[in-house]
Amino acid sequence: MKRLTISILAAALPVVSPFAHASDAESRAKARAMIDRAIEYLRAEQNPETGGWRENPEGPSYPAITGLVVNGMMLDPRYNETDPTIAAGIRNILSYAKPDGGIHDGVLPTYNTAICLSALADVRLPDAARIVQAGQSYLRTLQYHDQNTGGDEAPTFNEPVPPNHPYYGGVGYGKHGRPDLSNLGFFLQALHDTGVSTEDPAFKRAMVFLQRVQMLDEVNDMPYADGTNQGGFIYATVPNLESIDGLAGQSQAGSFEETTRTGGTIVRLRAYGSMTYVGFKSLIFADLAAGDPRVDAAWRWINEHYTMSENPGMGDDGRYYYYCAMGRALDAFGQPEVAGRDWRKDLIEALAQLQEPDGSFRVLDDRWMESDPVLITAYALIALQHAAGNTN
Image (cartoon, rainbow, N blue to C red; front, side):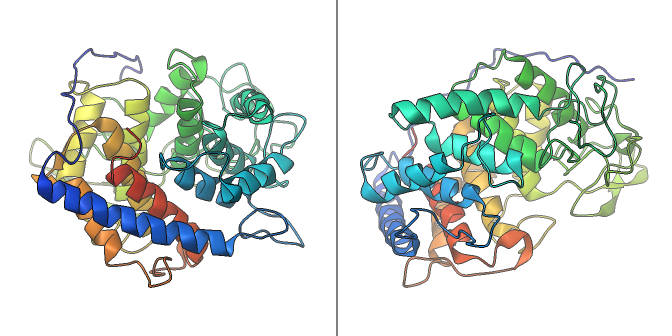
């Protein structure tokens, strides 16, 4: 069995100021205009009565959508919780807070709570601070580990999950959900944004799950990673709730024939774009740096598959989620170029080609709710804020 220990290296990245040249200033100005149009569109789409976005009066609603919009606006240094649109959105998010710390409408508690915590992270209001602290504690209860359970409603697990279990360190859509990298990514984003230390046990446990969804034989002890050197990430350690042996894993991009280091061929799950950026970002949030084999392998995959024309391995499926994850990850990593290209300029230009006259963004696909202009505009807004360097 391969090692699951964490070795944090001290390799430091150079500090690079985004947009250091005149042409960069032009890109930043372009991004600023796009951001302004996106925000105006989102202001117009806000429910004037509730302050939320895309709420279902018959329920359930997803406060995460409101959270993404508020997060995208709050990343802009020109805005804070005193802005009327943001203030109304914050009140809406707080209205979904539960006594146990969750922020949801009865469904998808991990997804909704985590995204809403990120939205509230920089809100300077006593009520928000209290709910953030409660939400952090609540999220910890959703993580599978050896001192927690899947919850009384879990159809499979009512006992602690040991470190050798494929669920260990992961989180799913709720207490009874199979863990996956997307939910873990939002979970770690929330802990990072709200100031939880990387020494927190939740981060340490998450690293075990992260290694098991990275297609890298060197660090992944699951059978589905034997011999693979891709370096990118897949979706989950098991294909469904009933398959708990860890033999198969799951990639939304399917499988392919991979050439091994020795020149042979094997069929393995295909790493893909959006999950690789989520995984890479999570490694950076855990204070891993260049020189760590996990970081280096993911960075190699990102350079080899760098593109703005699709979500690599998935086509147009989840393309705006991909842009959002890319912007967050590359901004956190701090390098100005990927594959010899200025990723900030490329991301701004790619989104410029997709923005509609009303400030929303063109629907490219209907998978994962990306037929909703509000959701994809929120994703694009977050991506633009990171590409424009507004979050530094």
